[in-house]
Length: 301
Ligand code: CP
Image 1 (tube, rainbow, N blue to C red):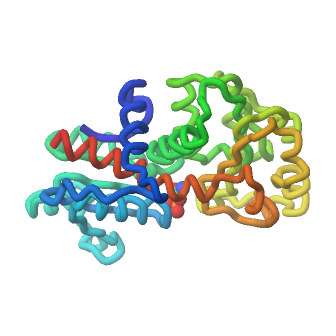
Image 2: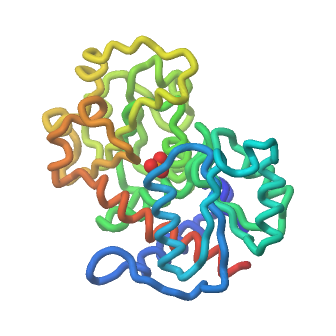
Protein backbone atom coordinates (compact mmCIF):
# COMPACT_ATOMS: atom_id res chain seq x y z
CA UNK A 1 0.00 0.00 0.00
CA UNK A 2 0.99 3.62 -0.60
CA UNK A 3 -0.15 7.02 0.61
CA UNK A 4 -0.20 9.09 -2.54
CA UNK A 5 -3.23 11.34 -2.18
CA UNK A 6 -6.43 11.82 -0.20
CA UNK A 7 -8.58 10.82 -3.20
CA UNK A 8 -7.24 7.25 -3.00
CA UNK A 9 -8.28 6.81 0.64
CA UNK A 10 -11.80 5.81 1.60
CA UNK A 11 -13.56 7.25 4.63
CA UNK A 12 -12.82 4.21 6.77
CA UNK A 13 -9.11 4.33 5.94
CA UNK A 14 -9.03 8.02 6.92
CA UNK A 15 -10.85 7.31 10.19
CA UNK A 16 -8.54 4.37 10.95
CA UNK A 17 -5.43 6.53 10.49
CA UNK A 18 -6.84 9.23 12.79
CA UNK A 19 -7.87 6.64 15.39
CA UNK A 20 -4.44 5.00 15.33
CA UNK A 21 -2.72 8.38 15.68
CA UNK A 22 -4.97 9.17 18.66
CA UNK A 23 -4.05 5.82 20.23
CA UNK A 24 -0.36 6.76 20.01
CA UNK A 25 -1.07 9.89 22.11
CA UNK A 26 0.67 9.91 25.47
CA UNK A 27 -1.21 10.92 28.64
CA UNK A 28 1.65 13.29 29.45
CA UNK A 29 1.68 15.01 26.05
CA UNK A 30 3.22 14.06 22.73
CA UNK A 31 3.16 10.51 21.40
CA UNK A 32 4.36 7.26 22.93
CA UNK A 33 7.28 5.28 21.61
CA UNK A 34 6.07 1.92 20.29
CA UNK A 35 9.23 0.15 19.16
CA UNK A 36 7.37 -2.47 17.12
CA UNK A 37 8.97 -2.07 13.69
CA UNK A 38 12.64 -2.66 14.44
CA UNK A 39 12.92 -4.82 11.31
CA UNK A 40 11.72 -2.05 8.96
CA UNK A 41 13.84 0.36 6.92
CA UNK A 42 12.72 3.56 5.19
CA UNK A 43 14.38 6.19 3.05
CA UNK A 44 13.59 9.89 2.91
CA UNK A 45 14.13 11.62 -0.42
CA UNK A 46 13.39 15.32 -0.10
CA UNK A 47 14.00 17.26 -3.29
CA UNK A 48 12.43 20.40 -1.76
CA UNK A 49 13.13 22.03 1.61
CA UNK A 50 11.22 20.93 4.68
CA UNK A 51 11.43 21.25 8.42
CA UNK A 52 8.10 20.00 9.80
CA UNK A 53 7.27 17.15 7.45
CA UNK A 54 10.75 15.70 7.23
CA UNK A 55 11.54 15.96 10.95
CA UNK A 56 8.18 14.57 11.99
CA UNK A 57 8.61 11.57 9.68
CA UNK A 58 12.08 11.00 11.16
CA UNK A 59 10.78 11.23 14.74
CA UNK A 60 7.80 9.03 13.86
CA UNK A 61 10.18 6.39 12.44
CA UNK A 62 12.33 6.57 15.59
CA UNK A 63 9.20 6.27 17.78
CA UNK A 64 8.26 3.09 15.91
CA UNK A 65 11.76 1.62 16.26
CA UNK A 66 12.32 1.63 12.48
CA UNK A 67 15.62 2.54 10.80
CA UNK A 68 15.87 5.17 8.11
CA UNK A 69 18.32 6.85 5.83
CA UNK A 70 18.03 10.44 4.68
CA UNK A 71 19.14 10.76 1.07
CA UNK A 72 20.17 14.30 0.22
CA UNK A 73 19.63 14.58 -3.56
CA UNK A 74 22.31 17.29 -3.77
CA UNK A 75 25.02 14.93 -2.50
CA UNK A 76 23.72 11.65 -3.92
CA UNK A 77 24.46 10.14 -7.33
CA UNK A 78 21.40 11.98 -8.64
CA UNK A 79 23.80 14.88 -9.30
CA UNK A 80 25.76 12.48 -11.53
CA UNK A 81 22.65 11.80 -13.60
CA UNK A 82 21.16 8.81 -11.79
CA UNK A 83 17.37 8.86 -12.08
CA UNK A 84 15.04 8.83 -9.09
CA UNK A 85 13.89 5.37 -10.19
CA UNK A 86 17.45 4.04 -10.29
CA UNK A 87 18.08 5.55 -6.85
CA UNK A 88 15.02 3.74 -5.49
CA UNK A 89 16.07 0.44 -7.10
CA UNK A 90 19.55 0.81 -5.59
CA UNK A 91 18.16 1.39 -2.10
CA UNK A 92 15.64 -1.44 -2.49
CA UNK A 93 18.55 -3.82 -3.21
CA UNK A 94 19.96 -2.78 0.18
CA UNK A 95 16.71 -3.67 1.95
CA UNK A 96 14.74 -0.41 1.94
CA UNK A 97 11.10 -0.96 1.05
CA UNK A 98 9.40 2.29 2.08
CA UNK A 99 10.14 5.64 0.45
CA UNK A 100 9.02 9.03 1.75
CA UNK A 101 9.31 11.53 -1.08
CA UNK A 102 8.93 15.30 -1.46
CA UNK A 103 9.38 16.57 -5.01
CA UNK A 104 8.48 19.64 -7.04
CA UNK A 105 6.60 17.42 -9.50
CA UNK A 106 3.88 14.82 -8.84
CA UNK A 107 6.19 11.86 -9.64
CA UNK A 108 5.04 9.54 -6.89
CA UNK A 109 2.12 7.86 -8.71
CA UNK A 110 4.42 6.86 -11.55
CA UNK A 111 6.97 5.48 -9.08
CA UNK A 112 4.27 3.50 -7.28
CA UNK A 113 3.14 2.01 -10.61
CA UNK A 114 6.71 1.28 -11.65
CA UNK A 115 7.59 -0.43 -8.35
CA UNK A 116 4.45 -2.18 -7.09
CA UNK A 117 6.40 -4.19 -4.49
CA UNK A 118 7.64 -1.04 -2.73
CA UNK A 119 5.73 1.44 -0.53
CA UNK A 120 5.60 5.18 -1.21
CA UNK A 121 4.44 8.09 0.93
CA UNK A 122 3.84 11.51 -0.59
CA UNK A 123 5.49 14.09 1.67
CA UNK A 124 4.50 17.00 -0.59
CA UNK A 125 4.16 16.97 -4.37
CA UNK A 126 4.81 20.34 -5.97
CA UNK A 127 1.67 22.46 -5.98
CA UNK A 128 -0.51 19.34 -6.23
CA UNK A 129 -0.89 17.53 -2.95
CA UNK A 130 0.26 17.14 0.64
CA UNK A 131 -1.94 14.40 2.07
CA UNK A 132 -0.21 13.94 5.42
CA UNK A 133 -0.64 17.67 6.16
CA UNK A 134 -4.38 17.41 5.50
CA UNK A 135 -4.60 14.34 7.75
CA UNK A 136 -2.57 16.13 10.44
CA UNK A 137 -5.07 18.99 10.28
CA UNK A 138 -7.91 16.51 10.66
CA UNK A 139 -6.18 14.99 13.71
CA UNK A 140 -5.88 18.51 15.17
CA UNK A 141 -9.60 19.16 14.53
CA UNK A 142 -10.37 15.90 16.38
CA UNK A 143 -8.02 16.85 19.22
CA UNK A 144 -10.37 19.75 19.96
CA UNK A 145 -13.44 17.50 19.71
CA UNK A 146 -14.77 19.14 16.58
CA UNK A 147 -16.39 17.42 13.62
CA UNK A 148 -15.17 18.63 10.24
CA UNK A 149 -18.61 17.90 8.74
CA UNK A 150 -20.14 20.49 11.11
CA UNK A 151 -17.64 23.27 10.44
CA UNK A 152 -17.71 26.48 8.45
CA UNK A 153 -14.19 26.59 7.01
CA UNK A 154 -12.30 29.45 5.39
CA UNK A 155 -8.89 29.24 3.72
CA UNK A 156 -7.06 32.54 3.27
CA UNK A 157 -3.95 33.38 1.24
CA UNK A 158 -2.01 32.19 -1.77
CA UNK A 159 -4.35 29.46 -2.96
CA UNK A 160 -3.14 28.85 -6.51
CA UNK A 161 0.02 26.93 -5.61
CA UNK A 162 -1.16 25.51 -2.31
CA UNK A 163 -0.81 21.73 -2.18
CA UNK A 164 -2.03 21.94 1.41
CA UNK A 165 -5.29 23.52 0.23
CA UNK A 166 -5.79 21.00 -2.56
CA UNK A 167 -5.40 18.04 -0.21
CA UNK A 168 -7.57 19.69 2.44
CA UNK A 169 -10.31 20.32 -0.13
CA UNK A 170 -10.15 16.63 -1.09
CA UNK A 171 -10.57 15.78 2.57
CA UNK A 172 -13.71 17.94 2.85
CA UNK A 173 -15.08 16.24 -0.27
CA UNK A 174 -14.71 12.89 1.50
CA UNK A 175 -15.88 13.90 4.96
CA UNK A 176 -18.07 16.94 4.25
CA UNK A 177 -18.14 20.35 5.91
CA UNK A 178 -20.88 22.93 6.46
CA UNK A 179 -19.35 25.59 4.21
CA UNK A 180 -15.99 26.04 2.51
CA UNK A 181 -14.93 29.54 1.50
CA UNK A 182 -11.73 30.97 0.10
CA UNK A 183 -10.18 34.41 0.08
CA UNK A 184 -6.90 36.01 -0.93
CA UNK A 185 -5.32 38.40 -3.36
CA UNK A 186 -7.21 37.58 -6.59
CA UNK A 187 -3.95 37.42 -8.64
CA UNK A 188 -2.83 34.53 -6.39
CA UNK A 189 -6.15 32.69 -6.43
CA UNK A 190 -7.19 32.57 -10.09
CA UNK A 191 -7.86 28.82 -10.13
CA UNK A 192 -10.35 29.21 -7.29
CA UNK A 193 -12.65 31.77 -8.96
CA UNK A 194 -14.91 29.05 -10.38
CA UNK A 195 -14.22 26.31 -7.87
CA UNK A 196 -17.14 23.89 -7.90
CA UNK A 197 -16.36 22.99 -4.32
CA UNK A 198 -16.22 26.07 -2.11
CA UNK A 199 -16.70 29.72 -2.92
CA UNK A 200 -14.05 32.40 -3.52
CA UNK A 201 -14.60 35.98 -2.38
CA UNK A 202 -11.79 38.60 -2.38
CA UNK A 203 -13.38 40.24 0.68
CA UNK A 204 -11.56 38.39 3.48
CA UNK A 205 -13.69 39.81 6.26
CA UNK A 206 -16.91 38.41 4.85
CA UNK A 207 -15.24 35.03 4.26
CA UNK A 208 -13.95 34.81 7.84
CA UNK A 209 -17.33 35.72 9.30
CA UNK A 210 -18.74 32.84 11.38
CA UNK A 211 -15.89 30.50 10.42
CA UNK A 212 -15.25 27.64 12.84
CA UNK A 213 -11.88 26.99 11.24
CA UNK A 214 -9.67 29.61 9.57
CA UNK A 215 -6.60 28.34 7.70
CA UNK A 216 -3.95 30.93 6.80
CA UNK A 217 -1.39 30.34 4.03
CA UNK A 218 1.90 31.99 3.17
CA UNK A 219 2.80 33.48 -0.20
CA UNK A 220 4.84 30.80 -1.99
CA UNK A 221 7.42 32.94 -3.77
CA UNK A 222 9.32 29.79 -4.76
CA UNK A 223 6.44 28.66 -7.00
CA UNK A 224 5.92 31.93 -8.85
CA UNK A 225 7.88 32.09 -12.09
CA UNK A 226 7.07 35.74 -12.68
CA UNK A 227 7.30 37.35 -9.30
CA UNK A 228 4.21 39.44 -9.07
CA UNK A 229 4.80 42.93 -7.86
CA UNK A 230 2.68 42.54 -4.78
CA UNK A 231 2.20 45.74 -2.84
CA UNK A 232 3.23 44.57 0.64
CA UNK A 233 1.29 47.28 2.49
CA UNK A 234 -1.85 46.62 0.46
CA UNK A 235 -1.54 42.85 0.98
CA UNK A 236 -1.19 43.28 4.73
CA UNK A 237 -4.11 45.72 4.92
CA UNK A 238 -6.41 43.38 2.99
CA UNK A 239 -5.26 39.87 3.86
CA UNK A 240 -3.26 39.83 7.09
CA UNK A 241 -5.02 37.88 9.83
CA UNK A 242 -5.17 39.89 13.04
CA UNK A 243 -6.94 39.52 16.39
CA UNK A 244 -9.27 42.33 15.44
CA UNK A 245 -10.32 40.86 12.11
CA UNK A 246 -10.74 37.38 13.59
CA UNK A 247 -13.36 38.75 16.00
CA UNK A 248 -15.87 38.05 13.21
CA UNK A 249 -15.09 34.34 13.22
CA UNK A 250 -17.31 31.94 15.19
CA UNK A 251 -16.91 31.64 18.95
CA UNK A 252 -14.11 29.18 19.80
CA UNK A 253 -12.90 29.10 16.20
CA UNK A 254 -9.67 27.28 15.43
CA UNK A 255 -6.86 29.02 13.56
CA UNK A 256 -4.48 26.85 11.52
CA UNK A 257 -1.48 27.46 9.30
CA UNK A 258 0.59 24.64 7.77
CA UNK A 259 3.80 26.62 8.37
CA UNK A 260 6.21 28.14 8.05
CA UNK A 261 4.34 31.25 9.16
CA UNK A 262 5.65 34.58 7.92
CA UNK A 263 4.72 36.79 10.84
CA UNK A 264 4.18 40.33 9.67
CA UNK A 265 2.68 39.14 6.37
CA UNK A 266 -0.16 36.59 6.57
CA UNK A 267 -0.33 36.66 10.41
CA UNK A 268 0.51 39.61 12.62
CA UNK A 269 2.72 38.91 15.64
CA UNK A 270 -0.09 39.02 18.22
CA UNK A 271 -1.84 36.04 16.62
CA UNK A 272 0.52 33.45 18.17
CA UNK A 273 -0.75 34.34 21.65
CA UNK A 274 -4.41 33.78 20.71
CA UNK A 275 -5.94 30.76 22.45
CA UNK A 276 -7.61 29.93 19.11
CA UNK A 277 -4.26 29.63 17.32
CA UNK A 278 -3.45 25.90 17.07
CA UNK A 279 -0.37 26.05 14.86
CA UNK A 280 1.82 24.49 17.56
CA UNK A 281 -0.68 21.61 17.89
CA UNK A 282 -0.56 21.04 14.12
CA UNK A 283 3.23 20.76 14.32
CA UNK A 284 3.16 18.37 17.29
CA UNK A 285 0.37 16.25 15.76
CA UNK A 286 2.47 15.75 12.63
CA UNK A 287 4.48 13.15 14.58
CA UNK A 288 1.48 11.07 15.70
CA UNK A 289 -0.22 11.26 12.34
CA UNK A 290 2.93 10.13 10.54
CA UNK A 291 3.45 7.33 13.09
CA UNK A 292 -0.05 6.12 12.19
CA UNK A 293 0.58 6.27 8.43
CA UNK A 294 3.92 4.47 8.78
CA UNK A 295 2.49 1.83 11.11
CA UNK A 296 -0.35 1.17 8.66
CA UNK A 297 2.04 0.77 5.75
CA UNK A 298 4.63 -1.26 7.71
CA UNK A 299 1.93 -3.62 8.94
CA UNK A 300 0.94 -4.35 5.35
CA UNK A 301 4.49 -5.00 4.08
N1 CP B 1 3.76 22.04 6.46
C1 CP B 1 4.91 21.70 5.85
O1 CP B 1 4.91 20.95 4.88
O2 CP B 1 6.02 22.27 6.39
P1 CP B 1 7.53 21.93 5.93
O3 CP B 1 7.68 22.48 4.52
O4 CP B 1 8.41 22.60 6.94
O5 CP B 1 7.66 20.44 5.90
